[in-house]
Image (cartoon, rainbow, N blue to C red):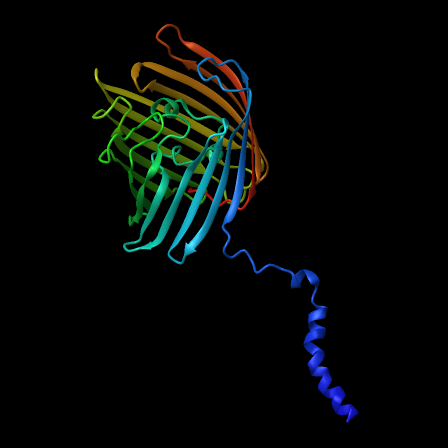
Length: 357
């Protein structure tokens, strides 16, 4: 009888023995973060040395902080939200949209607040850009650092092409209001935007991309006055397979034409920039940029500028950048020349998804 009791009690107490053997940390582990989005925070600190009466920014500022919230909604869609905090304490949604991945016809549909797919620079967030400022063409013709961005709908699709050419067509429809650029007065003042991009590999180490953009909306002159924007961009990339960690090169140019209706007639102004960057080592990049741009409201005034940029990546989560720029601003009275040194520090914590290529 004693033997039977021992044999019966062994299996009875086995679960308790196994439970006691499990580490306390495993017993107290949370159920998981399945329902939590990926969260990231990006800081962008900018310091400026020199005198610039035209663009008189503070000597030191937290230029922008960005909080990203990204997650899959369900098997058919994902959501991305980017909340930005400006240097003056202003808060806004830089982008916040849902992407439908299984739309019939192999379309990609986005709905929410979006950055306009105009050229290469406008869709990029500040922390993605390869320089500490923006080219003069974006400041003068696209309204400022942020460019075109508004509540809207975006529909894009890859178009089948021969000869290993990838062609992407994008059509967007916005409410029609972008800071310092467009202003919608009625529900009918919507803004269409179209972008066509072609990409091709030239070799195993090089590729080329060519794009064209067009948009039109009511401008700041008042109801009935519109501005049309046309853009052409081209990008060449070189990155050898065996030395890609240490050597690469990129050359990009972007041209913009603004046709702005005013009470005195239509003002045609254009501008462009040329940017070249070469990778010196695994963490070091050097670049040069040349800018030229008319004023959107006065095409007889044309600003010009040059910049030298040196960027160091301590890791994939931070970067330090030094930029020397010399701009010559055209003014009705007398031109203004400004030489400045820009020092930028950017860092990221958390999981931040990759941006479009």
